[in-house]
View 1 (cartoon, helix red, strand yellow):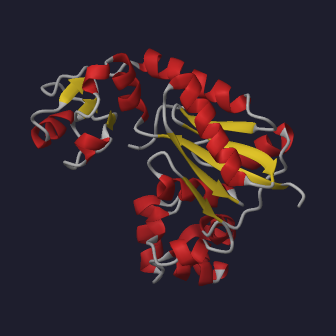
View 2 (cartoon, rainbow, N blue to C red):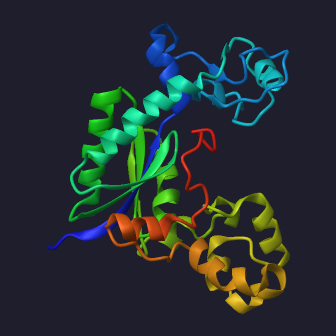
Length: 261
């Protein structure tokens, strides 16, 4: 069997909290909330929370004072951007060192990896092992035949797992889910789709692009269903082809984490 192109979405598990645990091993297993200067009396929001804190309903973007009320026993820590950036650089260097990998960094804690391989799951596990060995950080990997599918697949692999979404199982797995769960849609666009009677991924996949024109305009509407149902083709696994395919994607610039993981 010849190698075929795959997209892998690599997402570090509870990245900021995990970096803090590496620096302070005694915090392992405790509810950790990182945000601002770590002072809930100041105006700041949660940057990330450990899985233990998330069990109490704490999430990124939540006011720190509210998070502290939800978890009175939580360890509150200030944001240390330099430490997280240094850890991220090590992870991204590890990804770039993998055989045949073409890497597009999305943020501190996530990246797309394009690769030609016969066995993407085996490659993903090899990648996870390399990241763990070099950085002591765990990551989840979504495997897809498109950028969108790989990105959405990661959530099904968390924590520290691998999950594949392709044309074969896309609607089986995602069809009944609300459109807001698609990468790049979110609450605002899903609300606008709902006004048109489109509430699920199945319904979006079946929609006539022209029916979206009155709400989204002639330029956005024709391309939107193709992106949202994950049918954009895998880019050529060359640096030029990869950059061209991802340049216009949302969240394509390396930034801090965009959501709690």
